[in-house]
Length: 374
Image (cartoon, rainbow, N blue to C red; front, side, top):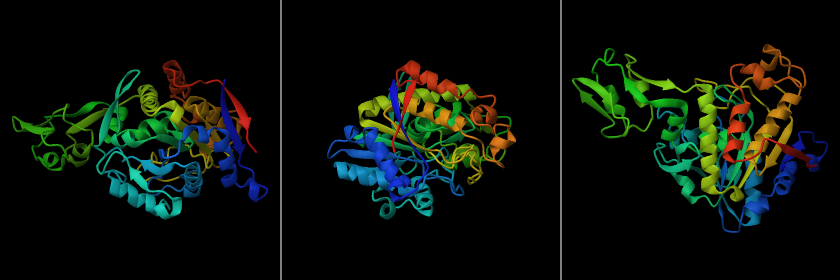
């Protein structure tokens, strides 16, 4: 049975600071076994959308960066561009500007920050997954080891976001993110197309949009899913079909398994922070982002070499906690300790689906032993 290491959020002295506890937790979970001296160690986290306030604080990342340096690794904090090219985090520059506004700078975290799918998110590599090829960020070719630092929370598409989402969607290229969110490439409703050609002007890939019989046409094999054409089309003639939740969950399991196989499970460590647990993802609150009251009190931090066990333990710990008055948990009647928080918030989504799929793919186990680290 996989071990998931847990430290609670209580602190009664400097030695019990969550920063100090985080160091002991990652050490217990096997950080030194993952990193060899000289390894280029990618630390994958999420730096938040523009107006969110409950993203993972940089001080936690700095602690892990310092640990990696002590072991002899070369830490690099990594992220990828957002889904759409016009999105607030749609390019490397825009994403790094938001990172700075949230305190994520090289001076603060002690390591460079790299957007590993390139300036526009088009740097990609094809990787085989158990249920089909996926497109991961091209910069992953340089990873000698990877540490996932995920702020655990809910998610409107897959019910929860933790280690699996952090290494699946979070390590996908822009086209990989599009393939995750949508079924097939964008298509044109020629009855609505007014032949303005504005989509042609903004498309970053030559030949991906062409004119046929005075109407635009998208070439699926060339389209990279940046969705600028959808954003630019005033008559709303260009559309794409969103994936259903179960399909999203199965895609996430496939991508996560591909990512772990590409880097090597023996070269990865996963950490989930059960702090300020919001009911939606740090980037899923629409517009420019926003944050709500956490659904449960701060619980602590968990770490494991197995992302499946880690996410299962994280869901279980959140569900065991009482809800916070005035939060989404109260809105949906999930205030009692033991109530299924994510099941109540997203009643049409079974949060177990991606965990069981990953278990079927051999990525990890849903059964685990929780080991407390003081």
